[in-house]
Structure formats: structure tokens, C-alpha cells
View 1: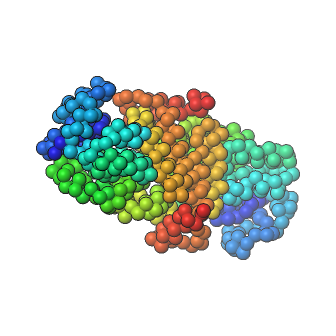
View 2: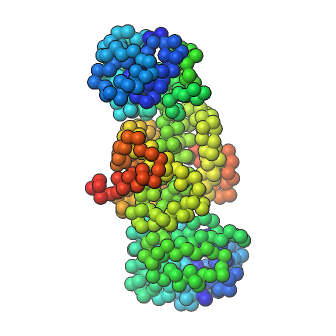
View 3: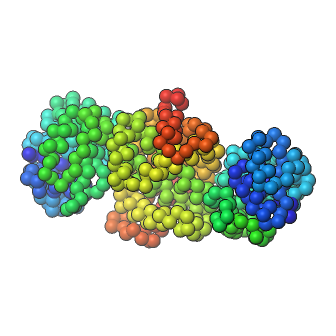
Length: 279
Length: 279
């Protein structure tokens, strides 16, 4: 099959590469994309057709893998595309429904997707949850690639709901642990908290390291994801506050490409979370 | 010493009992308290002087251990008490400052406290953090009891800040895990989430059990604690949303005295969190 990927970030390039390895031709559009994206796409063996118009003209299927805040815009940009459109972004079910309507109105077949875990590496496929009328067919198309497809149901939106629920914990608690450590610092009791945690919550020492690293490297795209989760919770009558707060934390985090999971990163992130900078 | 305890709930009775064992006389006031509280106090070896006025008239020191929402009111009720007043409640530093002013205005010596962990049992003392001018002296008074006193600093409010930071994680994440499981149920993807969690987040299975049990047995008094933590975060410019949301979850939880940490309790709690009941 000819599959278009919009746009090959770390995850998109990984999935594209897995599909190339499985014998598919994978197209992408370099127009307006960064040099880093070009290098990634080239390394993944994707074929550059330059423009989105060329992707939509030639692909049997398009996969959208982008930061959540760009998911709706992406669907708008391919308006009128008549093939299968897999939105694999971390969006709330109501947003997924908006995307489904946009794609459907243009004659395309929308499939809802949610990715859990990192890009595929040998021996550890990416897990892609799929839902909607075309989910089963799509899972069959991907058979043979280093992707573990799981069909949640034939109801579009369920894959997005599952992804929201999953990330609500992983990314929500990462934001929370950073907020707490910052709180303790602001109150001058950080040392006492770190000591108490080391005794009675020993896993939090490592969690803070990981969370600071994630906030500094991926926080910029998690803001939108946290806002989507808050929207998802509120849509079913649950409080959105956990994740509007998490979005706020990631919004404040500094963007440090290549930051380590180390004490220096914790310092940079905690200092950036300080109130004084956001007044 | 003669020490008054207001009011001996599970934690207060445990601390009172530890002080009795260390040779102190511990007073309490039964006026208006429940039969359960009376039984607990009697079992702990506390001496009933019936009225608050009698506690304040005879105690060298008073310890307030009550649900956070009642902490300020408790300080009002002993207005004019001139001894040492340890507020060991889970309140935000700004609330602790209000209590300090009330006690100070009446001529008393306020000490700030925060308890981490459960009531003392043989071989596992309760950990009591203390801060403020009288903290060191108070720690010395308690020496010999099954209580591990730690002086955070001579700044009143620091013990409360530390307690807020600690509970922000433990009780905040318990509310979050319940909200997420409820979200997945509302969206019809609970089974898929439980399956994914069992593979990639194995500790969450046990966390849901514990969290449901806690919500059903102690959630009623954690509402106020979550609100205090939200207030504490906001006072230093951090988002309060994590814990206003957690308060909302505990507010919805059913109160089931003696609930187990089992599937039946998960069911009762998750059903109670349902939107329809709170519209």
C-alpha cells in the first residue's frame, strides 16, 4: 500500500519506518517542515512527495501523528481526501468526533487511533489501539509491520478515550510530582520532603528525574494533550482540574532539546515552574 | 505532663494512647462526641473531663487532631487557652497562620505539626513533624512515647507545608486513579484499560483497590484536606486544580464504614463517581 504520514516526528517516523520495513511505500510532504524532520524522514526510508496535495493525491491511506493541538488543523489541511484517514493523535473523544466529521464530509474513511508507548524498536512494537468501522481492516493492513494493533471496538472515539485514560495517569502524575517538588521548594521544605520521600515513597526519587526530563524535552507537546484529557473528563462529568493543572505545569516547563534525566534538568525545570516567572 | 487531645479520632486516640504509655496524663472532652469516640478514648486510657472548658483549665498542652475542615473552628473553641497548642492537622500554611494568630491572641503558644503515616503501633511510631518556636521543646516532651518527632524548622507553617506536599502525592494520586477508572467506564473502555494497565502499569491494579477502600472509609475527611492542599499550592502560585479535582472525587465517594479493599468497594465507589448522580 501507499501510506502517507503527517508529519513524521519521532513517533511518525518510527511508524513510517516500520511500515516501510513491512513492504509499504510511505509518503510524506517536506514543504515547510524543519531540517530535523527531513533527516528523520530520510533515515526512516520515507519518500518525500513535497506537498500535502501530492500526499492526498497518491496515498491509499493517511496517518496523522502530530502534537494533539495540531490534530484538527491537520484534518482541515487534507479536506476532500477520499481514502482511509487514521487519526492516531492523543485527542479527547469529542475532538476525535470533530475530526471524524471533517474527514467524512470530504468523502474519507475516518479511523480512530491511540498510540501507547514509544516508537517501535526491534523486539518492542508500538501499541496502536484502533476503533471505528475501518479498524479491523486497518489492523490487517498493518499486519507484518513492527506494530501491535489492537482493535478496541467498532465505535470511533474509543481508541482516543483509552489513550486519554492511559496518559491521564502517566503524564498527569509526572506533572503532579514536579508541582509538589516545586511547592516544597517554594515553602523551604524541599530537603525534608526529599528525605521523607526517600524513606516512605522511594520510587518518587526516580519519578522526579524522569518527569523533569520529559517536561523539558516533550512538555511543549504535552500541554495540548493535558488540555484534551481535561476536555475528555469534563465531557463525561468528571473534574478536568487534574489535567488543566498538568497543562499549566508543562506550559511553564523550559524546552531543553537533549536534556538529560539528571539533577541539572530538575533544577532548570523547578526554577521555571516558579511563580515569579508567570505573573 | 497533662495533655489534652481534641478530638480523639483514630489518629488522636492512637497518639493519646502512646502518650499515656509514656507516663503522661491525657485528657479529653466527651461532650457532644459520639459513642464510637467514647469507646476509642476509653480503650486508649484517656481521662474524660467532659467539657472543653475543663480540658483548657487543666491541660499543660493541647493537641488538635481533627479533620482539616474543623481545624480553625477547634482553635476558636479553645480561645483564651494559655498553654502550648499543637495543631497537628493537615492544613495549608495560610490556614496554619490563621490558627497561630487565634491561639497567640488568646495568650497560647502555637506549635505547627503534621502527621505522616498511620496511628502508632508497636514497632512503628507515628511520624510527627513539628515547626515553630516551641517545636524543639515539644519534641523533648514527647520523648519516650511511641512517636517519632522531627523538627523541620523554627518557622511555624513548615510542618504543615511538608504534610501538604506529602499528601498531595499520596491522596492526590488515589483520587486520580479512581477518576481515570471511572472515565474509562463512562466511555465503555474500562476492560481495555484494565488489560493495558495490567501489562504496562502493573502497580495500578492494587492502587485502585487501595484508593477505593480509602475513598469509601476516609474520603469524607480527605475532601477538606484536598481543599487545603489546593489553597497551599495557589498561595505559592502553583495550580490548585489537581487537588480541587481530588476534593471533588472524594466528595462524591460514598461513606461505607468498614468497607473492604475489594472489587465490591471498587464498584460502589465507581458508581458513586458517576456524573448522573451529581448533576
